[in-house]
Length: 267
Image 1 (cartoon, rainbow, N blue to C red):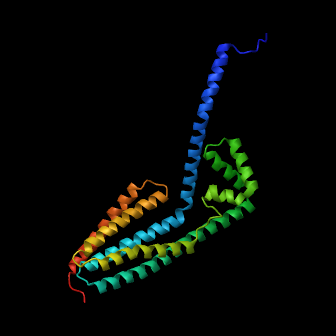
Image 2: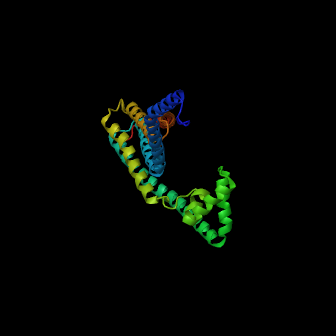
Image 3: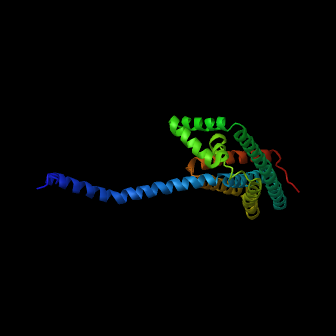
């Protein structure tokens, strides 16, 4: 009889362990899939950051600035014609201002990114060994051992030195530089969409309820924008919604008080 055969108790324990492992297998697989899905979603939330910031900022600005202006003018007893002219002027001027401002700002950011990349490319040509040491030091600072950090730095340098330094030293993705035209178009369009809401409600609401309707619909719109922006960006929606509601309410209250100081009929 072979001396290598397992004892009955050991065989039963091995079978029990295999059974538990088989039962846990699907659960582990499901957990891994859920973890992979969450990581995938978090990654794509970051890719949306540029255009999402421009869109939410534009819509918030269009809604709040136009509403605040109309609340102030409406509280000064302006009629529908004056309010329409005021709202349309605010929409056109605000959308243009947002487009120009975003284009200038993002262009400056892109110019700075390109300048940093040019400097880094020159340093890689002139002092490659020092740049390799610098990259390895970055990885050591992130917790890798000295040997592993050096190995990773050498591998990435051989693959694409400029991209490795741009991402890990400068925090820039050379393949996804800022796009000023995209930011300008998104900002202008979202501002116009946000401004249309108060213009519509100020025209359909009666003179006696115009200001309350403007304030109520604007606060609802601001809350929705804050929550949607937070959700698309991967953040909890409550705090951004409350933050924008408080700020919007304060802005419209100030505009209403200013309008009350000039509470005269505007022909």
